Amino acid sequence: MSSQVGQQIRGAGKKPILSYHNVMKRFGNFTALNGVSLDIYSGEVVCFIGPSGSGKSTMLRGTNALDPFDEGQVFLDGSPLPTSENEARHLRRRMGMVFQNFELFPHRTALENVMIGPVTVLGTSKDQAAKAALKLLDKVGLADKTQNYPANLSGGQQQRVAIARALAMEPELLLFDEPTSALDPETIGEVLNVMKTLADEGRTMIVVTHEMNFAKRVADWVVVFERGQVVEQGPPEQIFDDPHTERTRNFLSHLGWHG
Ligand SMILES: Nc1ncnc2c1ncn2[C@@H]1O[C@H](COP(=O)(O)OP(=O)(O)OP(=O)(O)O)[C@@H](O)[C@H]1O
Ligand SMILES: [Mg+2]
Image (cartoon, rainbow, N blue to C red; front, top):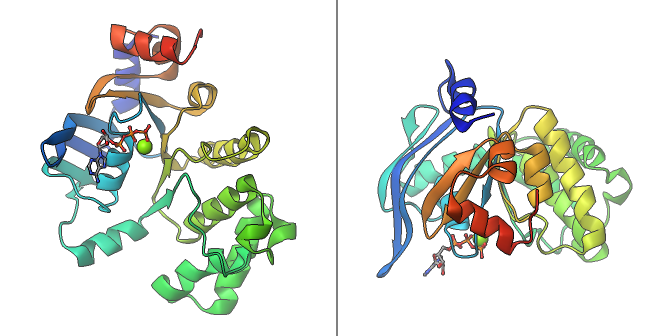
């Protein structure tokens, strides 16, 4: 499929849930994002790939207002991203974020980690939050680990708790920043399988990943970053089987990707 065809099918008659227009981000003299324009549609899994330091995490951190962009515009469901800290807090509730290092509360059980957001932020009753948390832990395959503390869970299990915790807030959008790169190889698959299930449910997901096989299999759209710019974007069959730019080809061949 040519990218043009992909683009037409992709955007036809739909409004993007997220739309970036010429986004810039600087750290001192260093330009981390240099004019990124990009649309993301509801129900899509969009994978961000590219070399270390290319700006992928900076994109996610700007999107949920952890570290706002300097210039350009971002529209979420047609409205500009908020600028005040109060509005930003509200925004973060609409987006579930899953980090490389899980960031669970160490002194709380798996169940408590999943319940705490709804109880403290959304005002859900403890009973109701516990019920929902049990369901979510079951969904990520951890029905038998609800009383474990993070220290007594494998990395893959901790990451699945973190995914359940993100889901507990019923976010419109899930943002993953290299969710499997801190994991032992044998637990990567279980986390990717949970993410595949979420993708199949039609959730909107942005996934920064170095797992090219996952991106090829699960992504609807792949965006290649280099030095703070988008060097190519398209459906996975384009990016992985028929990349249109030399820079995408170089990046993939450095990874040892052979299609
Ligand atoms: N707080 C900061 N202060 C200064 N420079 C920063 C800061 N955060 C990021 N950078 C720089 O911005 C660039 C983009 O960083 P970013 O973390 O977005 O890269 P990345 O694509 O996620 O890389 P990786 O694959 O290694 O996670 C890097 O060169 C990084 O050193
Ligand atoms: Mg990163």
